Structure formats: C-alpha cells, structure tokens
Length: 427
Ligand code: CA
Image 1: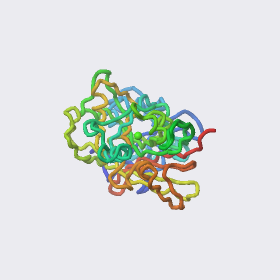
Image 2 (image 1 turned 90 degrees about the vertical axis):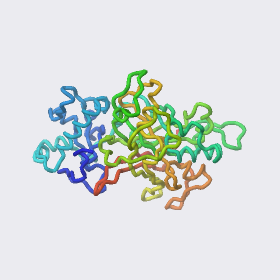
Image 3 (image 1 turned 90 degrees about the horizontal axis):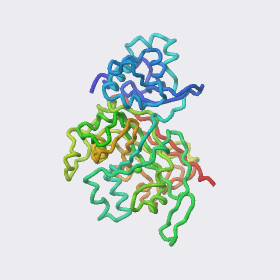
Image 4 (image 1 turned 180 degrees about the vertical axis):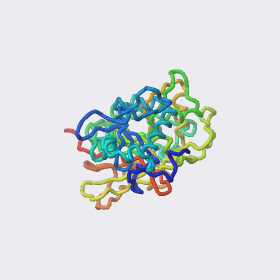
C-alpha cells in the first residue's frame, strides 16, 4: 500500500464515481489520435488520457531509477515492462503527483494541458505490447470440474494432476487482438456426436471464455527458474482476456495434445494494463489448497485479488447488452505467483511482454460460469435473453463484452472492456 492508492486522493480532472479510471488506477495503454500520427503511450484518467510520450519529449518524466533511458518512445509498453518494479513505482508516483488536485504543473497551465491530455473519444486504442509468447492456464477449479464433468462424468471430472500443478498450454500470440476487433466465425473440422465421419465447415459452437491475463515484466534467463517468492516482481499488470473458442473444433481435435485451431483464431484483450501496484488494496486470499502443493509452489501471504467480473451479451435486436455472467478473479485456485513459478521451474524463460492468461474464471454458482459451454451446459440448457431469444452458443452479430473492476470506498479501479462482435464465416 502506498500514497498512489490512497482512497482520499483526487485528481484535478473530474472522474465519475463509477469510472474505471480514477487517480488510484492509472493503467497504461497505447493509442493513436484519430487525427493521425504515431502511436503514443498514455495513462487513463477519467475519460482522458495523459500522453506520456509527449511528456517524455518535454523532459517531464524524471525517474531516478531510469537515468536517461527512454520508456515511452516506441509505441509499445515492452520497455516499461522490462524496466522493473523500481522504475514502475517511481514512474507511477510521478504521474500520480502530476494529476493530483493540489499539483499546479498541469492543472494551471492550459497550453500544456491541451497538448498533454487527449479525450478517449479522440483516439484508437492499440495492442499495449508486442506479445512474444502467450500461455493459457486452466486455474479455475470450478471451470475444470464443469468441463471435466461434461467430458468424463462427475467421478473423473478433475484429472489426477490438477490439484498438484497449474495446468496450461502454449497459445498463439499472433492472433491476440485489442478490444473492438470483430471475431469471424472460423471454419474447421469437427465430428458431430452421432456422425460416423468428420465434417468441414463454419463452427456451429462458437463460445467466449471470461479470463484475465498478466503481462510479464522483467524475464528470466533460460535455465534459471523464478522462485515463487520472487514471482510477482516479474509481473507488470493485468488485462481482461476473451479466449474465443470453437467448441466443436476443440472437442474433435484436442486429444492428445490439447487446444489448437479451436482456440488460435482470435483472442481479445482490453487495452488498459492495470499495474499490480494499483491492485494492492484489493489483495485477498485465494481458495485453500489441499493437498498442500510441492515446495516450489508454496507461496506465503495472499496471492489473489478481489476483482468483480461481468460478461454482457447483446444480440442485434437487443437495445441494451444483458449481463449473462458475474464472477470474480479471487475464485482462481492457482495464484499468479504459482503460475510463474511453475512455468519457469524447468528453466523455461519468460520475456517482457509475454502474456499469461488465467483460464476461464468460473465460480461455484451457475450464474458465475465464464463460458456458454458451462452456462448452457453443453447446449442442453439454453439461456433466455431479454429479447425472447435463446442462446446455447454464439450467433452471428452477437456482441460480447467482458468488464471488471475492484470496488473501493467511493471509487472503482477498473479494467475497462474487452469487446468483440461475431461476424459470419467467410464464404
Ligand atoms: Ca482458455
């Protein structure tokens, strides 16, 4: 906990109580002005963006731990991610001071403010980082149990390894896109339950997955594991992630090596990366772990965060999106630190800008299930929407929004949105 997260802090920029971006948050993102020009780096404050690329050009980012090294001139967050905790902390403290209601530098200089601040309405958000490698974990016990029950029955729902290690697979970084990018219904091979031979065509069982993901900061050298006690020092910040899934393609292809074309056609993330430091006030205990994990996975202290999560669906005939899932990041059985310790224990190297996703974040109640596969129980219990339609899986033109926030006393530290609309399959 430090002064940048103090609940009493206020900015000279007005911030609504339900805004995701009060001065206590200060998430980083990459944007381009609609008027054109190069990509810039900014922090969100209310409905504005403070342009850090501009401030750095003006010589206004004076961070002692940084020296003359520049962080914001390359249109991506990788240099900041690589710089490590001390630089993150000093930069955040500087930005928090600049935006405070009692700080005059920007507040009382309209000409400077005019150049340093831009309305969110006047920009396009870009991918925040160059993502080298992408890993998707499977850390919700409830999600793994639900899916295992559907595939293997309730007696064998969890595989024997699940309570001993954070299961994951290597995903595809090239098809990770920023919120607002449409998802085109993919083609693929599948085998309907009663069919004798596989068929080829547009996926019939398109789904979303409610996940969050963490960007790696400083990496580790090949062959040198990151101890669980140091793991969080290697983590920069969190985003929302929608792991679009074609269930029919996935079900046919997944044995024995796991997800492939049923997953790698698109993955959507939210554009604002919320630093771990902003989440400190919302740290909490995760689920109790039994059996006790092996020593390399044993972490002291609280490793979870209380982040309220929602999924909204809007069909074309619906005037408003409708909430179809409410969950929380704190249900995840395996912590971020345990994921990093496990990922690197064999010597695998992580690099700045790598992305580690949590896996679908399903809670214990049916309204907290983080995918349509679970919400409709593999299509056997379609959901009813306010417009009278039913949904087992996504239809063309459906729009899915993931959102989430930490609720403080009178303010929200939020993640914005990860949005995607389903476009019909290419002909
Ligand atoms: Ca997933």
